[in-house]
Image (cartoon, rainbow, N blue to C red):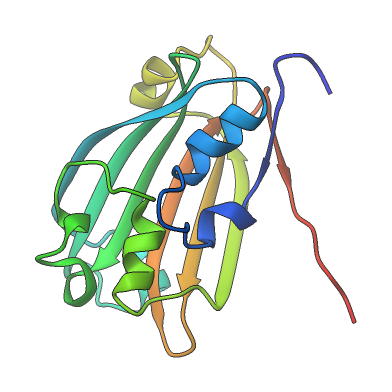
Length: 179
């Protein structure tokens, strides 16, 4: 592992936080002696893109709430994440507001009765869109990893995250307990 590489585990990001705990990103960065912050670019109603609609089990183009965030590590943009929620879940809640949520969105969702039971992640490498390249300050020719996380409770999906990271410094770690 190089000095600039970041090893990212997904499990803390689907677990509700205890009262008074930081959001998962701030806590993860602090444990490594770094400073993790985020900027909420917007939280608004948008038509569901095809891949998001399929993951949420809604009709393509139907209204969903999109929370767009830029994630920073020590003041530098390191991740771009768009999170989508069905209107029936997020409409009229803090998820639809462009402000930070104490403990993170996962904690608010738990308060609303939505707790992760099934999480599916798909990861692919691709070349960044020009806006992603600019926002992540990537040199030409540097690929990104795109992670799409679908989170569901026992009955239905309630959240889809689409995250983009520089592929050259990101390692995703998955751990399973078997048997």
